[in-house]
Length: 323
Image (cartoon, rainbow, N blue to C red; front, side, top):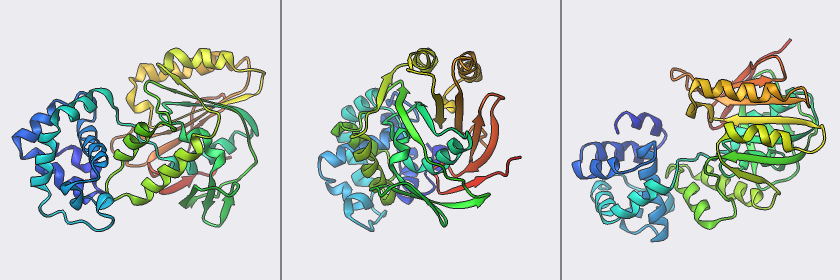
């Protein structure tokens, strides 16, 4: 539990609760009953998920998102433990049936500029590990990279700190949107929405508001969410696309869940089908445990080229100059 705490550096409450759980045998027993990984994420999200059902309760006074602002961390240990033990069976069931699924549409501030680098304006869009499909509607958001803006008016505005070379906007037309995920989330389903909100750290009010707005957009756009293994479904999905227009296959924070041999298989599936139509691959992945940033990759047929870096949630973007 203490090793996991470094991932909660931006949540003072979760940092404190990490110590509370690690030092308490009964709480560790519950944590060890959580089936899906990362277990701390699932347990803490499960607590928020059940708190929302109950309106927060006494524990809510210590959670900024339930308290409506500043909330004292001091004294949270007792009501937290009482809540977990009182809901142990429900939390274990959540840990058996729910998964950690980060849906941060702000990553599109990095994905979209790399798509522009392909030079294509009309394309089918496929997202691997899509979850609720928020990245598949990237053309429905409004963007700001310092003084450069793009997109129509939208209830979602995505901004970032720009580093490196400037973005080069172009108009795009998304012909079709397909997301492949082992456990896709329905953006129109209330329980699924509540689960995605529960996965957000209690102090991250801006992310929560952005998620809600993005889910509203995604629920109104024609997106095909396909359930299954990307290695089994990517090939047939590419084969079944109509016409001969280009395809953009993108993935963000997905390859870290795959063995290197499986990552190579993704390369092979795409390469095998490049003779039939242009296929561009866009990658935003953090595979180096020593580097907190994500690497941005582009493959238009000659292998994956690193074209920039970004903060994992899109807080800053650095694009490299290309020849």
